[in-house]
Length: 104
Image (cartoon, one colour):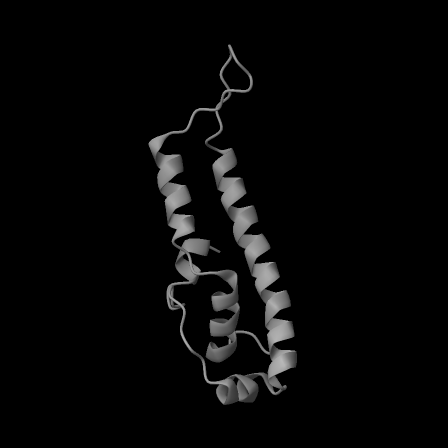
């Protein structure tokens, strides 16, 4: 799964969500819904971080002269910027619930 393409319909800015709609989609009260979405967003955040770290490992070139020196290249910087532009994990979790991708 390509992480960068899987979150294209998630808003990148903060949006107000109707509490009633969120409760209808989750089938739980707002407090329970938020607690569950928090746990889901933690999982999403960890997966995004793992994916980024895996891709960044490919760019790590250790200098033969100095083992602590790591060079950054243009592709690595672009990859990092693309991950910075991703929506927050909480926004992703809420949108997944609203779109019916996840059920709680």
